[in-house]
Length: 190
Length: 190
Image (tube, rainbow over all chains, first blue to last red; front, top):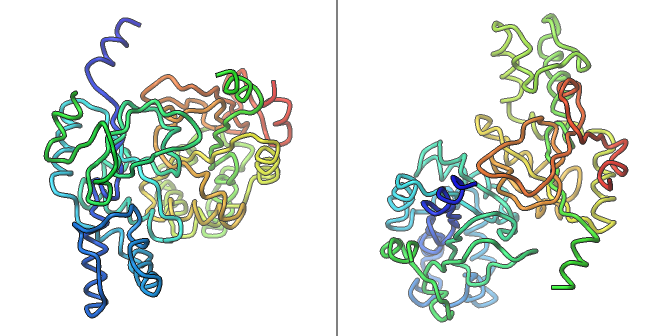
């Protein structure tokens, strides 16, 4: 029992969301959208204000927007968010128990498989053992959840504390804990 | 607080493993193996004694055995275990919170995607929201885990109680709680 207490004080179990935290959904979407529809209007990254990109586009463009992120290859092709891969390796190296905790877009039939392929491509095969794929993150035991979604709710009160990963689309949200991979050390350890 | 206590006493969160509990890995394997290699020796279902089927085959046949369950289409083609689909629907209908909690075979590149397709095929699309895919089931909050694996261990003491789903290959295991979909009501409610 004493050992357990000492052990918990040293490291944390950190659940890390995937899209918008380590995989750059917004950049991947916008690059692909502009390439596919160079003559259509678009919302620049820094002007994104809604959590779901589709909501910020007019009705007539929404089918095109959806077509981008429902396409085969979209999830696998997402660029990593700057600093994320290095930070994950550092967290693991210093002894924190890190899991990639991601909620799949079930309407995209390739999403889940490509999320695993993305992890292999950018972090290596061993990290696939750290994947947790589910809709409701509140039922996972953890100390921290790093997520760009302002409201991570579910069937129960979570054991983890939510750290909001800062993105333009959540800038207006009032949150006590925020971070990016540029300042994670001070936020996670506080 | 009072409401919470009353609420927990009424229903349970039940995590249900997939292979060997709702999807018949053993029958799917044996049917496919015998069809592919009709002249090779095989282990009948009722004589299976090891948790992993491969271990019960001689060294020279193990590559053939692996080839069966690493093949595209294997997981999607598994037959449901008798009574499982009806029981899941009954559990959900009576108000229990049911999740399919499955650990993927990462060496099979089609496994995870096909597990989702299997759920859609046999239980319907809504049940994919109930999927939890991860390697370590101990980090999921739950009341019960129904699993055919005798030793479900991981990084922490689980909150769930393990009910062993009876199969020929775990018959020799000494377990306090055992069930099949033929007697689940008396076991789960006790």
